Length: 281
Image (cartoon, rainbow, N blue to C red; front, side):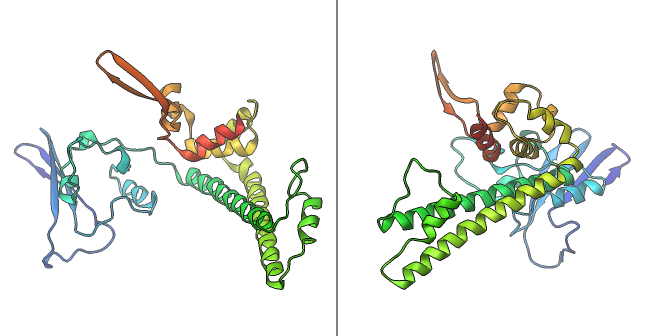
């Protein structure tokens, strides 16, 4: 940051590579520079060729920049406004967008992000378990075997029935055992992740809110933890309507002139939290 004593004009320069590595300015690389000009400040954004935009690196870089005393916001690409007729997407146009048009997203602290990772990892394990169930059921049904619909699946009796199935060829028995093993392994992973979540719950700063949410019908501790891991402190939402919009549970709306039409929910919010609410209902 430099100051001009005559006009007290501050110029802030943000480089995409600052703090990551030294930039060899002697190289013949071009850069796109965007200026957000105000009366007292000029904010400069430098977009170097080959930079990542919607990268997979999480919030680590944002925290490092804030720790150095700078302001930094994370903006989701889906929330960057575009004109309906604007079909040209370049780094130069991105760099020249006005800062006032961009809305930053909420950045969780490290503890909150760690709990979110734990809850979402369990959700991933649960998806793998469901996929393993479907693959085993499809294989068994494809060869003419069917567990009675009035009996519960994945019980000891069901596993004994699966283990007792006989096929014409030995390698089909190998396939059956592999599918059964995949189901058991997936179920073990889900159980382990569930135990880990219950173990760390008392240490979490939002544990009292988890207990409060379990008073609601259909909400158990796992559901409450998943919701709060995704949402964070619910008080950051200014109104229930804003919370529902974040979850994508508000209806879509199209109005033109005197006509007004509402559609299905927008589904633009966080899918994990929305599925948790649906499963708990």
